[in-house]
Amino acid sequence: MDLKTARQIVDALKQSDRILITSHVDPDGDSVGSQLALYDYVTSLGKIAAIFGQGTIPSKYLFLNGIDKIVTDSSNAVFDADTAVVLEATSIERIGKVKRMLTQGMRIVNIDHHIGNSNYGDLNLVDESASSVGELLYKILKLDGFRMHRETAEKLYTAILTDTGRFHFASTTPDALRIAAELVEAGARPRVITDKIYFSMSAEQTRVIGEMMCNAELVHQGRMCVMSLTEEMVEARGLSFADFEGAVEYSMYVKSVEVGMLFKSVGDNCTKVSIRSRSSFDVAALARRFGGGGHVNAAGATIMMPFEAAKKALVESAGEVFSAND
Ligand code: 5GP
Ligand code: MN
Image (cartoon, rainbow, N blue to C red; front, side, top):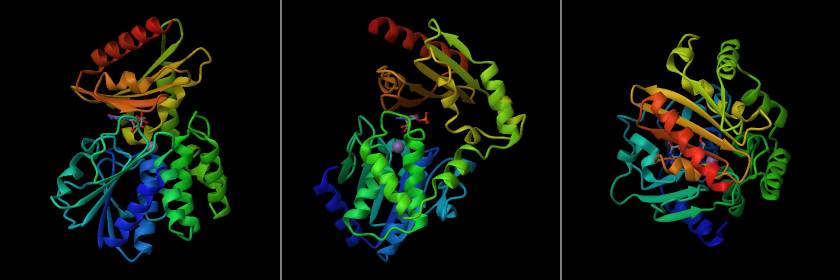
């Protein structure tokens, strides 16, 4: 992490009075945990802060202390801030409707760990080697001697746990593990948090996942698994897509699979894809071809194409990469 920029961020936050915190649309564990932890830090400095986002918070994160601080429908929200901290967003477009709230003269602080961040901030702390934004925030808070309470520790632990896929992905670095250990020392409860996030599904959720796995297709000689979730499948059980954040992980359960995809039909002409890989297959590069982004082994895109057409295009595109790599 670039210490000079981290110190400048601490100074900028201390000079601010009103701080707007935001992250990418359809929040995941890193964005939720990181936003809440940053809120704890800046309010401990006596600042007025507010968190604005877009998209439903997956129910598995609702146990986190202060979760109700996140405004999820920011369409008509007003908050006169002097500084906006944008977490986890490769480009400013990723924050969706909240972009409207970033007015002229506001200082923008950009903290991210994705490849290809466009450095849209006045201060940019972009570290691709970090497991998560939670890890970067831990380092920033520690730099300023913040006294970590259990609540904040659990938010940062959630960020690291989920973005490393439960300490599974290549992003599970010594730093990520050391920080996780320090968070446990500060009171974070690994058993409780993992249970809340990964082992607290409703029976309906497990049925939909069962259906999704039954219908999974293995393509490219079993090297790729394609799974689908449609609105009908989800709504038939009284659920929403937010209940399946992270479900792409099931596409990687088969040994031969190098690349897994989960397609969600989010509208007639809009398809969201989540992509994972375990090899050197760069799924962020694949996602970028379709206007998305992410990391080498975890990426996604929102494609303005009908469901079947988007699937076909992605499967073909991945096939080209397999052929080129062979
Ligand atoms: P997920 O598949 O869990 O939604 O996202 C995996 C990774 O891909 C995350 O790092 C996320 O930020 C990135 N990602 C997911 N969807 C999009 C998208 O529509 N655009 C961009 N630029 N990145 C995305
Ligand atoms: Mn992240």
